[in-house]
Image (cartoon, rainbow, N blue to C red):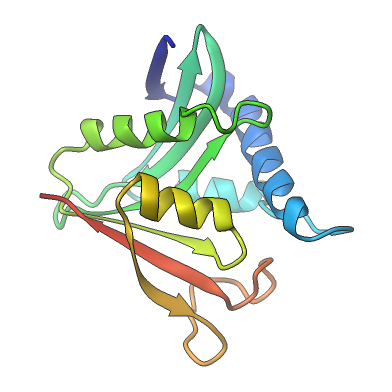
Length: 168
């Protein structure tokens, strides 16, 4: 596999967003039949892309974009956030997500702590972050313990896990 993780260029951004939205949509639709809601809006992606310290990466195998990630790097604290990580539909379960994560860690060796969240029903994500990437579940958001940064109308509602990975 000729894998590389590189910054997204302007020419790729439209396809990058579409592929990310499709991957998130298909993941949720596997859990919830007849879901008539857009899971990841372009507005959500743009908000992440415009955050201070945001870097968008695309995963490329043999000159084809097969996934990507958006990370937010805090240079002062090195407590960094993985906003989104996706693998293009039809390419899952082939190690691409693991390659993306490994490359991110290598690109940001000064990171002290990585953080991310995922909805409670995303069993594949939970498995991936804990068993493949070494994250720990450190918080469970629910109606009695809300994360005010998560919109109420988001699929999964108030039920999200927060993960952290302390780097050595």
